[in-house]
Amino acid sequence: MLTLVERPTPKPAAREVLIAQEAIGVNFVDLNHRAGAPYPVTLPFVPGIEAVGRVIAVGPDVAPDWSDAYVGYAGPMPGAYASHAVVAADDLVRIPETMPARRSAAVLMQGMTAYYLSHLVTDCGPGDIVVVHAAASGVGRHLAHWLKAKGAIVIGTSRRSAGVDMMRADGVDHAIQVDDPRDLARRVAERLGAPKAVTTVFDGVGGAICIPSLTTLAPRGHYISYGLAAGVMPPFSVAALSGFLDQDFAGSLRVQWASLGDYLDTPVRRQHAADAVFAACSNGLLKQPPTRTFALENARQSHRWLQEHRDGYKAILLP
Image (tube, rainbow, N blue to C red; front, top):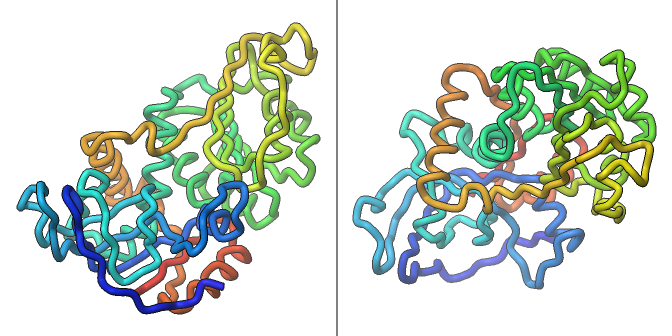
């Protein structure tokens, strides 16, 4: 029910800090956690994996320069839907004082995700043809912008006409509405003038779009999954990636799951990614998503609003 409750203010343990939170990012994975699928949680549970605020207390073995630092985090699960949160100091990134909390919380998680996908998981550039599923979503928009800046040809997909309009406005090379995943390969081939010509697929959707995505790939193509917005993918044989067993697949395909926590797994890497996001926001490469703020006690309404505004919108909770 996402009911607001009073709890004692937590105290930081060793290598932890206490943050007075100023803005909390609401992400679609929060809705998955609330539903208990596909990511199971143990109740009672406080959702939230992203927030920005000020350090007001530090635990033992924390460097003194974290005191009063303006910080954010994206990925750990300290129960971010709260006025205060205890977070490991190693999980934090420093936020420029010039970046307002609401703006930072609107781009941090999604921007860092787009960064590691476009810069660490792959090195797509000129000559590469990439498919970005849900390219009108928060991560998808940032990812498409970064891939375009690196010289790749970007094919964006959306299930909604409003998403197609947004992708076109963003300058995506080919904006495709995919109502039925089974039409994906045909629609992509029509745009490219050839089947099986895609270098890389970025998929934060999952579910039924997975197998059709594999059929768009050229030999040695790379399918990268980083989210399960539409649920888990159907099972398939690794041997099918050879192309010998299924004529719909080219040969030597690569399939990968890529998580933020595995790629941005050190304080240095996290801070580098965050700095890249803030720089890209400052120079206009990454656009601020349409944002609506909600009081913390209205978290339920924020989830409902986010479900109704899936294409590129961001909900922010204010304690």
